[in-house]
Image: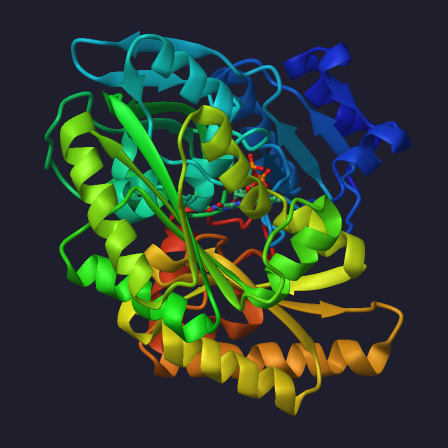
Length: 457
Ligand SMILES: Cc1cc2nc3c(=O)[nH]c(=O)nc-3n(C[C@H](O)[C@H](O)[C@H](O)COP(=O)(O)OP(=O)(O)OC[C@H]3O[C@@H](n4cnc5c(N)ncnc54)[C@H](O)[C@@H]3O)c2cc1C
C-alpha cells in the first residue's frame, strides 16, 4: 500500500485531477484480458515524459511498484498490478506527433490506438503493417511492449520490424532515447530491440519512432474449406513452398467454425473441419496472378473455394475470423488461450499432438490462428466452477507447451510471458537463459520497482 503522503506527492507531479484512488476507478484498472484481478493503489494519467520520470524517482525513493498500462487487452497479465502500487495509464499521451512522408516514418505517443494510426497513415497513402486482431482498442505502446504480431505478419513481419527508435524512462527515472530516425543505424548495442517485447519491465515508453511503407495499391481475399484439418495445413505449406507469400494466411478448425456459425448464423459449412482465409495485396496485375495461383492450390485439397469480389464480399469472408473471441465467450465462461508457434512445416504435427493431449485429459479444445506463421491459438475451454476440469486443463497446457518446445517451437509467438507463462519459462530458456535475463533486469531496475512479478517465476 502506498500511503496518503506518497499519493499527495504524486498528485503534485501530475495534477490532482490526473490521479485517482477511488475504488470504482481502481477496479477499471485491475484486470486485462487474462481474467485475473489485482487492485492498484493509485492510477495516474501523466501528460509527458518528465512527469513519469518524477514518479519513477519517487518510486525508487519510497520503493513502491509502478506498472505501465495501455488498453489492458494483453492476454498474459502484463499490465496487472500484481503487487499493487501505481498504474500509469496513457490516455493523455495519445498524439500522433509526426507523419514524415519523405522519410517514411512517424513519431507517436504510446497511447495512440493502433487502428487510429492505421487510418491516419493510410489517408496519406502510407501503410503501417502490424495489425493485431485487437487493433481497434490496443495501443501502440502496448504493441511495442509486447512486440505484438498480427494477421499480416506472414508477409510483413511484426511490431519489432517497424520500430526505429524509442524515448523511454528508465526505472531509475532517467530519460533515454534509443535507435535512429534513419533507415539504417548500427551504433552500439541495439537497445531498441531489447526494449521492444520487454513487457514494461525495463522502461516506460513515452515516444515511438515507427517505419512506414507505401500503401499497397490493391487487395484480394480468398477462402477455402476442407474436410480435414491436416488438408488445410498442408495447403498452407504448399502455398509457401510455391514461393507465394500472402499478406495473411489464417486457419480456423472445425470446432471454431461451428462455434462461430452458431453465433452469427451466416451459412458456414458446419461439416467442414477447417478453413483457410487468405488475403494478399500489392500491384493489381501481380496480385491477380498470385491470388489465382493460390486459388488453384486451394482447389487441390479444398472442398469449397471462394474468391471475394467487392469490398463487402471480402468483409463477409473476414467475419467468422473476427468473431471467434465473442463466439467462444458464448459457449464457455473461461478459456486458456495459448499462442504457441512451431516451424511452419510442423503445424500438422502440432494439431495432432494437441488433439491427443486434449483427448487424454478430456478437455474441450478449439484451434485457430496464423497458419502462415506457424502460430496457432490453442484454446482450452473450461468452467471455472469445476475445479477438476480446471486442473485437467492446466495439466494439458503444460504437456502441450513441453511438446511445442520439443518441436523446436516457442511457447509464445506474440502474447508474451506476463504472469500466465512465467511458470513455463524454463522450458524454453533454461536456467542459463533466465539467469542472463534476470541480470539485465537488475541493471535497468536495481530496486525492482517497475512492473514486478512479470516474466520471471
Ligand atoms: C480479442 C483480442 C485479440 C488479440 N489479438 C492479438 C494479435 O492478433 N496479436 C497480438 O500480438 N496480440 C493480440 N492480442 C493481445 C493484445 O492486444 C496485445 O498484446 C497488445 O499489444 C496489448 O496492447 P495494450 O495497449 O492493450 O497493452 P496492455 O495490455 O495494457 O499492456 C501490455 C504490456 O505492455 C506494457 N505497456 C503498455 N504500455 C506501455 C508503455 N508505454 N511503456 C512500457 N510498457 C508498456 C504493460 O505493462 C504490459 O506488460 C489480442 C487481445 C485480444 C483481447
